[in-house]
Every structure is written in C-alpha cells, then in structure tokens.
Length: 239
Image (cartoon, rainbow, N blue to C red):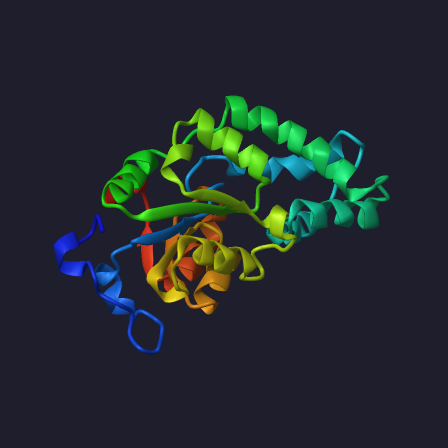
C-alpha cells in the first residue's frame, strides 16, 4: 500500500465481522482492487454530465435538472428508456444508447485523459503483484478503447461493465461479480469510487471503500468522505 510498508501489512486478514475498522485503513494491503473508471481514473465526467443535455437539446428538448440528476445512477439502457417515457423519443432504447455511445466514443478516443498520478498508482500496485480490475457503468468497448489509448488497459485483469450485467451500481452485482473473478472476498477487496451512491453500494456489500475526489460531485464530497474507509484527493498524493 502506498500509505504504509508492504512488509508490515501483507498477509493481514479482515476481522471476523468482515468489515475493516475505519481506523485500520493503513493495514489494508490492497492485494485486490476494483476501480471505477469515469471520474475516478479518467477525467471524463464533464462530457458525461453534458451528454444527456446535449442529446436532448439537439432534439429541441430542455429537461429539468432533477431528471438529469436522477439519471446519473442509471445504466444507459435505463436512461434511454427514461428518455422515451419522459419525452416520447422513438425507441427502442438500444437505438438511443447507440447514438449516445457514438458521441462518447469520439470523446474517449480523442479527448479524455487519465487523472494525474493515476497511472503511476496503478503501476505501483501492479508491481507488487496486486490484482486490479475495472468495474464501470460505461459499456466495455468504450471503456477498453479509452484505457487502451491511455496505455493502462494492460494493468487490469479485466474490465466489467454494468451494461453487461444489466444492472446499475445501485445494486452490488458488478462489485460482487468482479470480486469473484479476482478470487477475493468483499472484505479483502478495495473499491475506488467517486460517486456517493456507488460507494455506498460497495460499502453496504462489505467492501473496503476508497473515496476519490471528483469536481463534478463536489457537493457530495462531505458525505462520501464520511462514508468511505479511505479518501483520496489527488492520485499524485498516493504515489
């Protein structure tokens, strides 16, 4: 762990209750890690924040902010169905998803960058033999294209998308499935998240949670940092 001596922490196991005491964060060796992508590893939230607004605006629709906020925790298919119900946009939902993903595909292939220090942090963990994966709400082809262009896809054992499982991060399925593929239990697995609702889901499922600061969710930071086992304001401070 970048915050403590590996020799001092390796081999420690979670307590019998299955949860790490909050003041034991520096004993968490992070041998198994699940990373969110957007807003956590890559600086893409400003594009996602505007995607629904831009998509609807191109069709002469001006949605209420409350609706866009509610959609943040949805999968893209769920959001597309919401557009159909709320605004009468012709379906099927997959057609709408394909159109929005085409917009984001361009962003991922040209504009989205890693957050400063993220690559070095991943390389440090990987160099210690830690097993890493990505669990994201973004479709796997988009995620892979982005991480490949940024030169970090090879640091992960696999990429798992909520779209593949058919459920959002309001449910723990993506974390539990990722942990099984890593060969780990929730209590010995660190989940890195920038979104409050997702971090809450992971923590409630028994995972060690690391809150990653993201300007798009600045208003949630007090609640997120209080919820998490560990907080990270800047990847460079963790290297």
